[in-house]
Image 1 (cartoon, helix red, strand yellow):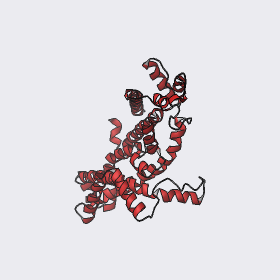
Image 2 (tube, helix red, strand yellow; image 1 turned 60 degrees about the vertical axis):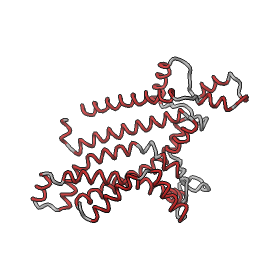
Image 3 (cartoon, one colour; image 1 turned 90 degrees about the vertical axis):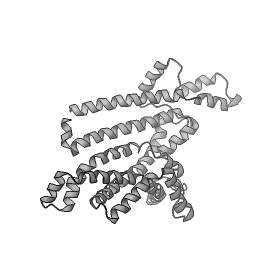
Image 4 (cartoon, helix red, strand yellow; image 1 turned 180 degrees about the vertical axis):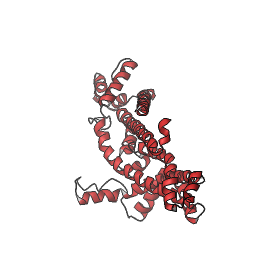
Length: 325
């Protein structure tokens, strides 16, 4: 319990610090979204409507410390204001709608990449020096070296434009009404193949390289030699002796990947015009929609901190020696 309380206090302080940066950063940027809206309207809006616009979007006048306290209070009450680009929708509605798409796409891709990458790393390390190890290692390093935008464009160009096997964008067929039906679910799966392949290609290499390196560092340990000397099978030694201890650093990589789920994959979602959080963030940046940008960054921060807290607890479960640390 003391361990959990210490970590909770630490992550709460980290969240408040991130929220503070999130408050001051947009205010240090040049430009005011309300002023931009008012200027773009020209003579259609009277001068007295400027203050009404500020009140509508939550840009209240007053000392900076008062604005900061109001901002912190809105965070813990769940009132993130109204979107400027998607007015009059509240920020929570805009992000909540995109959240479903991002969790479905990024969550599935992360789980598949972690499972497959960890397995490939374990087998490659156990068979180090073999043809399988060379192919997997070179492929993983190549996958991690290529930028996500390049991977997205290559996959889209080959399978979308050239071969025409899959759709070039959208999360589902726009002509279909959203419904819990086989036709709509099939359209979702069909449109999600290319983004899923892209994300898995980007993520799987990192998990594979991390797991392989961790396994190789542990294969010469005394307890591995003792396990083999006891006559245990290679599969038992590989999975329960080597892989379990090598999994700890890989879990940290998984926490980072989970933390980016709710942030969305901006590049992939923009390339495939996928209606997730990454695409929403990109559109908000173009429109200087500060409430949406701040809400998105808060979600990313909170998710990353929660994921790291879960990893801290998982570390103790995987390695009981950490309980006394």
